[in-house]
Image 1: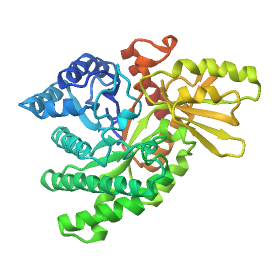
Image 2 (image 1 turned 180 degrees about the vertical axis):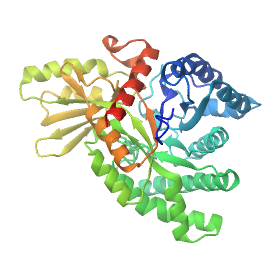
Image 3 (image 1 turned 60 degrees about the horizontal axis):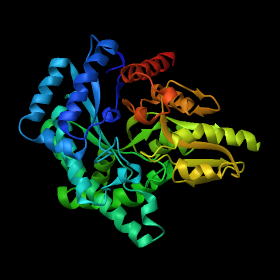
Image 4 (image 1 turned 90 degrees about the horizontal axis):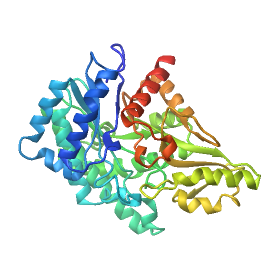
Length: 408
């Protein structure tokens, strides 16, 4: 939904919170939830959708007359699609996901083909007056590749080549239709690019020279123009949970990306768990007990601790971090678990909600991004005392965001 008539912000929630990998399952959830949310939140104006499609659903949507029928349904319901979540390729609910969420990664043909399918879908559905983005994984999963520099270079080079192929298609679409599409890389803990420094290094040392070289040959253009087009069509998905877990200051992230010429294609509004670590052993035991229900078996919940000297130490998952809590040198833990954004305090735990507030304020100052997507996808795996009716939960998240924007 467009937040106001005089605003360029489009707000949605990501439909990855609903289980379903086939198109019939996805559409059933859209029919169940979206019209009700629109009636509550935007009864008189178009309502935007942040659509998540697995590879299976994408292929089915492109088959037969499904895409045309879906577009007609959107028109009838006064809905529009402006962003897709192209991160999870396959199953995302009711199964162990963990590091398999990165499969296939950007070094593979499968990831390329999937993203090209999403590109075709978004080009068809996107309204003419706005740009459209596809968020995607941060190339690959860092722990898979160890310390072998030669292997890393192969993965990075193949990823650059595949990203450039998507950009070439997006350039073609823009020339044919006038619609601007972009691919939004999503840094997160233990991703191959997980923080602002690694994003900038990847763009400058890999994507622009290697991807640019491909576009020079493909499009018969100069390297400088090729790099300009890459920066237009490859952007960053700033997930507020992820970069909070990395202890990154939002104002610094915005400034550093802008200085490097890297655009933010989408802001995913989400909150992580954070907790101050006391020296008292009994209090640490209480914190561990409070954290234990969040160490569930479906998703990765990376933990980064900050020590008194400012150094950061990474744990690959909350379940592996918990045994170290009592003896840890940490002053603070932050955990990649998307908790409801409208709650700040969870007894002895807190959330990184304050970073969301900062980001929303920064956006109104510098207009760095127009796409906002609420992405609390963990409703099914939250501790039982935190679960409420899903429709009401989604509505509360929208209302919290709208209130914060109005307050700024």
